[in-house]
Length: 248
Ligand code: SF4
Image 1 (cartoon, rainbow, N blue to C red):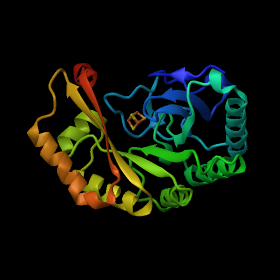
Image 2: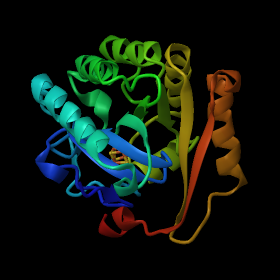
Image 3: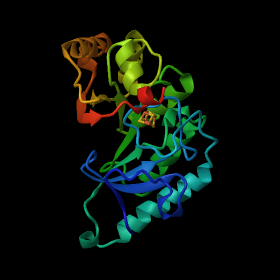
Image 4: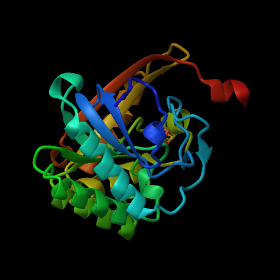
């Protein structure tokens, strides 16, 4: 089986709708991705987003039987390869799709399906269950149900925080959102499930964020309670052109 590598964001690889495998620097091995957004729909529009044909909106209902079948097939296929043929070990099964996973009306049931398949294939102890999220839906009860399931399965969340002021959030994530709200959501998430902050520091048109950016950003983490957070996963993008401003 050929694996997607690097920044290739085709999720329909191997003819599957919901499941893909990628050689991931993020996860330091093979990451099995679960894409609940096959229609490329997200509620944000981040400046660095690599989803092809990204649209604003929500994903359709998930066919849970198909998700179960695809995940079993993918894991069975990887397990049947010789170790030499595999680039590295399976590090995680991550909800990381072509849009925000928690927008799916079937997010919590999908988490249960993934958890059950991992148990059935005896992977639950060695392979991490992860959600990579923009955090926009963590105050919803149905999403919190899914977060609790992830915690109970020994999993974790990577929660996106790319700025600590309204302007920074608008510039990077193209969404109107108060930093106070981000801090609240992050605190709630961290109270339910082990949570890492995932941050992309972006130099827009060659200009790196300044000390004010850093102060505002740290204020969001402080508001959430840094003692509750597992840590920060930092990526630096040194030159991202602000195409939205040019288009607008
Ligand atoms: S939250 Fe993720 S999928 Fe949505 S626009 Fe940002 S990077 Fe793309």
